[in-house]
Length: 239
Image (cartoon, rainbow, N blue to C red; front, side):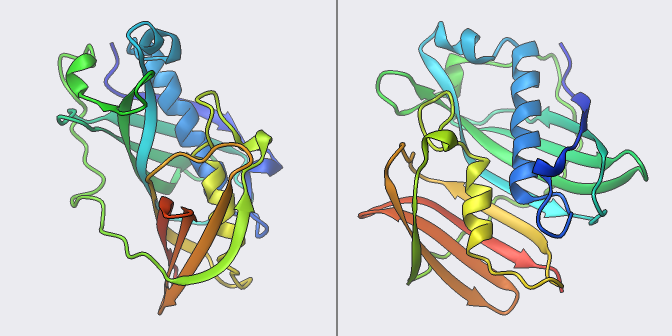
């Protein structure tokens, strides 16, 4: 079994933001795809987990952009898991521009196992990676940061059927577009870092109330469903 996994992707226009950089949703889509590919090789794919009444849910993610190539055509994506804790399976990623060999971004995500019937987080003891050792490269030296909840209501988003994934809820990559829509970036502004906490699932047809708060080069955006927080995020703009 491989403790590190990599593959290449050819990017289409769907992966770019309006300024022809790799978009947040495009990056999230790449990370989600390669994590799923690696999971299958580790016996932790969708069908494998269904047999034991579990499925994967992403709880947190962080993207840290290192370079901003214009319309990157082909990228290499690398991923590896870290040793699980009691409830979390953390994973690191790199996206590399093959034309220049520059790192576009480094990222991390925190995954949890959820019980199919109870829809609650399950203990990691129910599944263990079949790995004798773990790749030791560490891309982030601190835990995920604490995020503030903004107070100013700025709009709403109705979850569309096209945004729903195989688990029946709003797909994690779609949050990238929702957040981007409310950043209102100028043409000279680019995202340096984004942290997203996925707190509760959102279902097709549900209305998400969006709130926002800005301070210096940081923008906080969160989504709520009545009194339930769906997600919160913090975006850092490159200075």
